[in-house]
Amino acid sequence: MDDVETPAETTPDAAPPPGRDRFAPLWESPATSGRGRPPRVSRAQVVDAAVAIADSDGLDAVSMRSVARSLDVGAMTLYSHVPGRDELVDAMVDRAYADLELPDHDLAWRPALEQYARGYWDLLRSHPWLLDLNTWRLPLAPHVFDAEEAGFRILLDTGLSATQVLETITIVNNTVAGFARAAVAEDADAQAHGTDYASYWAASSDFWEHLFDPSRYPSMTRLWSVGAFDSTSMPFDLHISGLLDTLQLLIDRAQAEGPAVIPSYEECMAGYDDAVAEELGKLQE
Image (cartoon, rainbow, N blue to C red):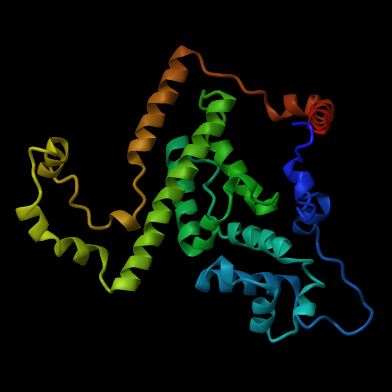
C-alpha cells in the first residue's frame, strides 16, 4: 500500500488551488497605462460579452474565442484583461451577482428573507448558467460576498445560533435553486416539444380518468380533492411560504428558550487579527 500514488501524484497537470492572484482582479481596479494605443475593449466589455453568451447559449458556449468573436477582436486581446477562462468565469459570476436585488436593511427578518429569496430567484432566472456552477466554490468576489452578507444580516440577531444562521441561508439558497432548476427544465421541455406546462397537463385527462387508482394513492387523492394541485404556475413561481412558516417557529422557540448571543462587530474586531492568524495557521497545518 505504501507504493500507491496519491491522486495529486498521478495527475501532475492538476491546477493548484486558486490564490490571491486569481481573485485580486475582482477587487482591484484595472491598472491603466498612458503609453501606446488605448485598448480596443475594456475588461468590463469582455465580461459583459461573456455573460451575454452564457445567458443566451449556456456556460459551455463561453470560450476566449467565442467572446473575442462577439467583440470582433482577436482572442489574444482578451488575455490582456483575463489570463484564462477560469478567471473569466469568476468575473462573470461577480458581474451576474451585481444584478441581485438585496433587501432593505430596515425590513423585519421575514419580509427581508422573502425579498432575498425572490432576488436570488430572479438572478437564477436571468442567468440560468449560474446553476451549472459548484455553489460550494463560488469565486471570492465582492458581489458574491455582498449577497452572502445580506443573507446573514437578515437572521443574525433573530435569536438563532451562528450555525443555524448559516444552515438556514443554505437551505433557502438550495430551495430557490431547486425551483430554478425545475423552471429551466420546464423551459427546455416546452421549447423542445412545443407544449407549455398547462397544455401538457390538460392533455393528460385520459390518464386520470382511466388509469389513476385513487385507492392506491389516497394521500395524493386527498390533496387533489382540496385543490392542492390546481396551480398551473408551479414551475415559474417561487413558493417558500411554508419554509418561512417553519423558520418562524424555529425563531420563536429560540426566543422563548433564550436567544443565542453572537458577538457584535466591535467585539469581533477586538480580537480579529489574532483570530485570523490562528485560522490561517490551521489551514497551513
